[in-house]
Image (spheres, rainbow, N blue to C red):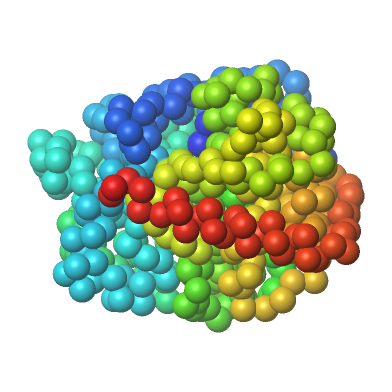
Length: 491
């Protein structure tokens, strides 16, 4: 018995097969293109996402016995929004990605009109280009001919999960779950359903949106003509960060995780009580069980962390791979005062400034690439510390996952900065693992969350050092640099 899990991320699609004992038996991966038509704009081709999904799944299916598969779980980059033709499944335009900043003016207009307080009350979010609703409002304003077909019912609107389900089921199902829906600015977080008030505010027809389904159960069935000759239940859905929380088995109130991906995302399980934050954190739905019970979380969303390392590799070309960064950074004992604020797409939690831009400061004649690489790793740890310091309850430890969690130097710097142990599991692909766990619950591969807890195993715990004065001084210098990065796009 095993589960096929699909992790449709920001830069590529990962497919894994997870066995009943929680092992990853096979893995496939396929990157897709990033499109940057203007400064601050980020787009993906839906068709390229779909082809990457097929290729990653073909790769993994070639390594396993298909007859052992019981179901499919899907997890995805969340706030990215897509349109597609309900009959042909073709897309009339590229997807607007969660990192995209083009809707800053939309947010400003809504804020100046006095809508932000009500939006936050209903959604737990804030008016920021990050979220899907502003992207849809932008399309309606700037591409009226396309939007007319949304209003006529020909084009469907959804996030990446709903698009993949449509492609995998030959257009039979148009569904999503609360963990994705709650990031659109269109869902009432207290009821777990679409809000007519919010749909009206953003000008989005309710009928264009997906139906809301639980996070696990038999949610749809794949069409073998569309999806690699497979007829399997799609039995688990979740946005990537909630999926990672589930994959880290953070089922108890207060359990917290940090995923180092393209961005970094810190989530804390808050149970069935809807949490509120006045410190820049987002209230969010974690998951909904088939019996309708909603579990909530507080989230700190950091837009650029792993993407900063990718920029060192592809933009500056000063590293050959992300894996090299630990060794390069370790050649110097410190960044020697160099600070890198990776606000390459603005600042997320807790500062929330879409007009901030990247900043490198403290450079001298003695600065080398090693100092900049180390400053990049330190920036990731500083950003996570900023978020954790706004959490309402003190941590006893932090579970980490995602690609950059394999970097021992980063994990140690992170522990030093937050002052509690950082725990890395043996399986750091916890986003895909969470999707597999959800689908496994939905198909009976696992009977309960208690059974899932037994699959979690520690790889290494990083204990914080004792030089608090030095750690706090470095963090204070970082905060000074963050303030200088703010509002730069308006200058």
